Image 1 (cartoon, rainbow, N blue to C red):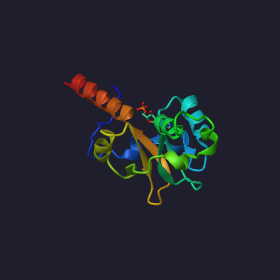
Image 2 (image 1 turned 60 degrees about the vertical axis):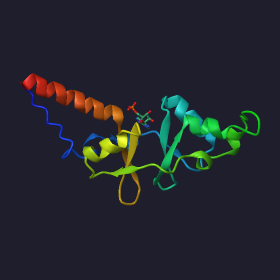
Image 3 (image 1 turned 120 degrees about the vertical axis):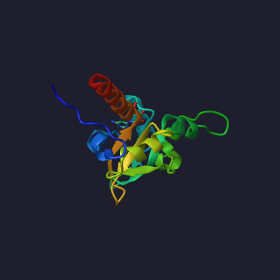
Image 4 (image 1 turned 30 degrees about the vertical axis):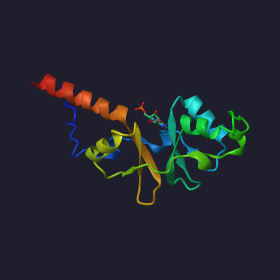
Length: 149
Ligand code: AMP
C-alpha cells in the first residue's frame, strides 16, 4: 500500500504546501480599482495579493477595501473605481512568511488571515499558503493515523 508522508507541523516547510506564485491571482499597486474589482469578481476570491512593478509583495486588497474607497461624501461614487488605484486603499500591515518557515509558523498567522503570502529575502512573492490547505493536511493526517491504528 502507498505510504503517505507524515504531516509534522514543526518540520514541514511552507514551500512544500504553498500554492506557487504562477497560480496566484494578484494585482499591481498602480492598477485602477476597477481592474482589482474585475480580478476579485472573476476569480471569486475575497482578497488577493498586491505586488509592485517588480513582483515584490506590498499587501492585500479585498472587496471591502474597494467598497469603502467608493464612498464619496454622501453616496457610492462608481467613477472612483477609475480614479483611485489599488495603492490608495490596500492594506499594507500584513504578515508574510519565508519559504523556509515551517507550517507551525504559518499556523499562527492563519488564525487571523485565511491566506498568507510567502516571500523570499527580497520580498518577491513565491506563493501563498491558505487556511484550506492547512485544514486538508490535518484531515489527511487524522485519517492516516486512524487507519494505521
Ligand atoms: P481558500 O482557503 O482556498 O478558500 O483560500 C482563502 C483565500 O486565499 C481566498 O479567499 C483568496 O483570498 C486567497 N486565495 C486562495 N487561492 C488563491 C489564488 N490562487 N490566487 C489568489 N488568491 C488566492
